[in-house]
Length: 342
Image (cartoon, rainbow, N blue to C red; front, side, top):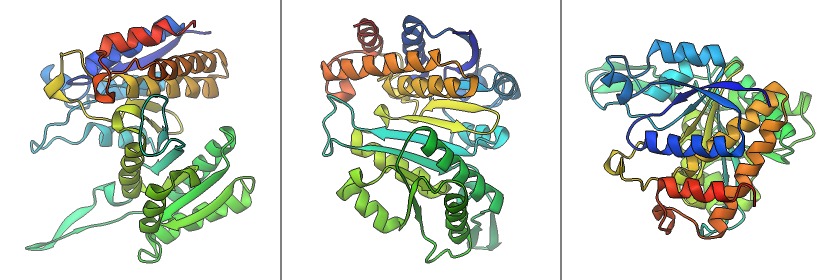
């Protein structure tokens, strides 16, 4: 395995604890990574920088990949979101969140295996807002043919590479005929012209959400525009135990940032009780991405070994407190490491 330089953003609150636990597991598993540390969020502010320093952006552009702990953006002080800045400046248009049932984590459903793919740069989150007249404000939903086409193609390519069977597009094109209409038309075209091998269906989002909570096993990959993807990805996380047990990635054509999707939880920072699993799962996604982009299958092997180990730890009831166990952050990492060669 060749050595890879990867930007590491430890984040705020519980961020340094969970990133420390994750890097320890990766080192023990044989991932040959040279971490290049940079800051964002409150940690960057405390050093006199912006919440998203240009040097951090430059480092990700240089190395092409980052692992990011949870970062805090101060509320009501004029700071732009760390995550929004990352997506816009690096053009990370595909947000990917795999959600699956985990051994030892009991929820209503036991057969969830869904990947949510969310368009990450357009929609209502484009930030185009204005005051029409005093007391009346407007937010504009943006959809471009290019943006809709590239996320559809990315989703179908991902489905093919990962040997998934079906893509379902959630939409509201019956009401938003232009924006959501464009989104589903591009998905239809990509399916018909380039990826007829993948089953394709559409669902109006309110009916789709009802189907999700009735029987999530009927879905494989969900493709959604920005706002819908934000909401539905958290809904799906709730089907398997919450944001503490799901990974996330923001991917573009040139760079990718892998992150825990939960918050920085400052009230429990420094107490060694945070669950590092979400970031560890994101690191496995990162290793899979490296295997795809570098052609070095040893990254995939290491990722699979880590995945088997944390699955086994959970099955053995080696869990953190949020999952009903008794282990702390570092102890859970140790439990995973103990099972790496088991």
